[in-house]
Length: 272
Ligand code: HPA
Image (cartoon, rainbow, N blue to C red; front, side, top):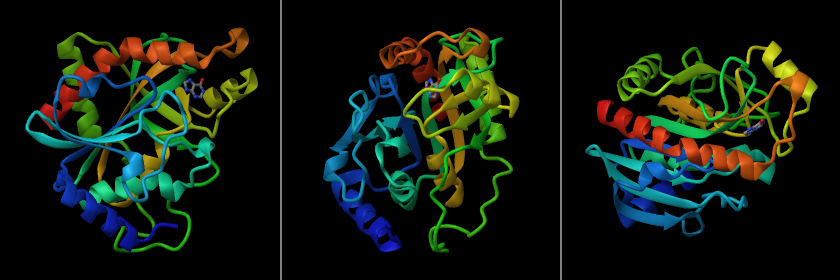
């Protein structure tokens, strides 16, 4: 398990490499990379050169920490993430958030691909997270709590910033994009869900399901950050008519929506 000293050690190393003073953390999930294609990249490091950063074992996830200047803000972009299903511990998944927060980050913008149980919406739509349901069997706060990192019992009444979500809705309308807003549930994966599982997820109030996002958001709330989550709805999961889904199809749907997502994220950063 990683300690406060490990966090400080990696933060100091990143500081020496020019990553000191971060404003915003951005996580780019499956098939989503456009956000950093047209920005000023100040520094870039592969995760395997950063002490304690977990390495992604998923082929379509790059593993780089990028420092980019976006709309005058210093953004630490995690290009690719680690998942629980890869065997990473929750502490390892939370580690980059804790390190980058200790370099000053106050805001997290996270993204990913998700299956859609809300049958009024469409494949390729973008959904802003209004809230979440954690169905992973554990979370990054299990174990002894170090008060230097965060409080023992963090509040989750506003996991996703209502004011940032309102700003995001306004910006998306100005850009002419439809953005849905709903509840995201996280499951372990790596298998996709059975029809009964999608029906269950819908019944308990989830609009979308994925295999990530929530551990990093819990770690970010623990240290007192504000969070925004945006997912591309890559497959519509109708339990009464479930079609086989494959990952290349999910990635290609995410990639098609990526330029819209990148525009929303850059406008949001400029307005934050
Ligand atoms: N289930 C879980 N994770 C996902 C899905 C899904 O249907 N689609 C994209 N990520």
